[in-house]
Image (cartoon, rainbow, N blue to C red):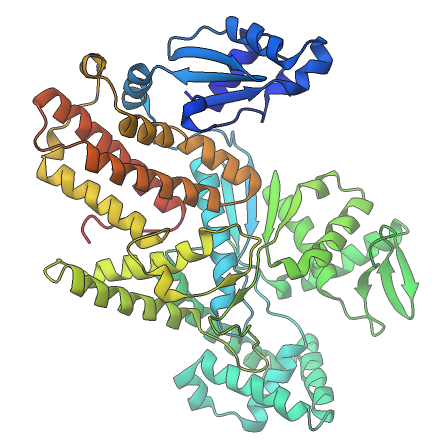
Length: 561
């Protein structure tokens, strides 16, 4: 029983227009029913008072899982038959991969690192949100393509080559990797503030890259190799992989056809020597070519979008990028629309808030104010290990569990709040075993595993009858827990539709809290045989749902903590 089932009853039995029902079902406070439908919008259609409409609708609803339907103050409140509902959920709850995707493809551009720059805490949100959306869409049965759109083109590479040749040392870079490259990058900008001429030297070196200069290309490829090797460590820790690493440089030979198409369609106009596409009155024109003929981010993103459509034939292409790029993506999608591409509407920017440090500082590669994400993860693992040794010193494989808990805490910290909100990163708060944290979910999962292990979970047979609980009656804590569990698929669908993993995170926290309340009020080991088996089924289902849900949020599920 879910919102969709209630919608079907309203449409099929009460003959309420479907467009008036979709999205209108509410979950009220428990005293007002399990589901509620406000009828106020129907008053103009039916020319009756909301109270009368609610009464008429309630009298037409008949379903075996609904104990009663109540009309009150313009609402139709549905009260479930608790025994039947819980029994049906235990018998039929399906945790297998779904088929909602129906063969459609979703492209997700996320994490997208810059070559020769570290993967820092600022990459956490894009990586976590994109990675979670990837897993959720995959669970729903979509073909999903994860794209790491490398920032591997631009004047910054000329700056880095100049800095390396002027102040760098090959062995130092081999030893320190991205940290050494970042130091050179920062030094370049410090020196450029005193001597503007080195900016010209940097542009000359980037021009050499564009012209195929052997030395410039060798250094460019070396910096790229170093970067990918370094970030692979982080992606391995997060258990994230990508289907494509095609970056900006891949689309260099695809830019000219885009420019020609814009010219042929009469969309490219000159503005102060540059080439632009005029957009809506409230939006600045999209800059396609600079005065010197060089392409820009918009140009390359146009080429990338067209390539992705031709290669993957996506139903949606999501760009998980910080909200500071709102205008950029409006321009890109606006140009695609003016080019006549109907699929431009399927390209969507999924913005998120920025990450700042606990002291309020924001991040800047140019100033060297960077907190490496790898260091954050390693620190979290170490802190988790200290906590585990205090709470459970005899725990087997503590290092493995600490890794699950530490990394899970960091990732959940990025996913548990609305993605558009700015985040102040606080690792100590994220690692707490109580409260709205990843470790709290993992601890609840481990508690379920512990109960099942003590009770011999291997002997559990599928739930087949609800006669026992009919006699005894399902208590409120059991009912509320199972009701939350039943909302899993519905929540995942809504989370994907809104591109908001925090909705799933919120549901899992509610399930964990409800389970711990259920565990306190429903004794298991001391229960009589039939109730004992029934309660174990509740524990097993909770454990499976938490494990699945956490996996969709990129969290591992330790069986002991």
